[in-house]
Length: 75
Image 1: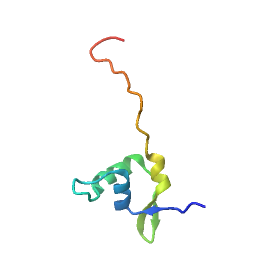
Image 2 (image 1 turned 60 degrees about the vertical axis):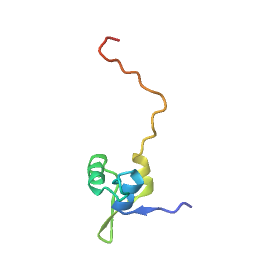
Image 3 (image 1 turned 180 degrees about the vertical axis):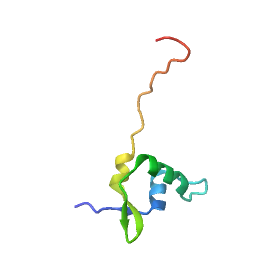
Image 4 (image 1 turned 30 degrees about the horizontal axis):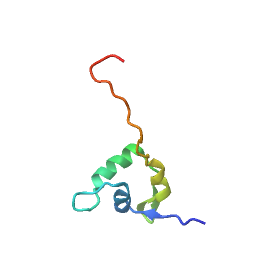
């Protein structure tokens, strides 16, 4: 049985890489991402919480093959 990992907004921002140069969470950038991606969020005891598995569902693996890009010509 896998335990559910709950995260606060600050922890979720760090987990997703929304951090300032000093390592503190960039909550403004995280709020913009949250508004656009609309991950599943839960209100627990009046606070917003996120499940790690829900955040993982929004992560996309990096592309391994480069895309061809045509610049200034027909293809």
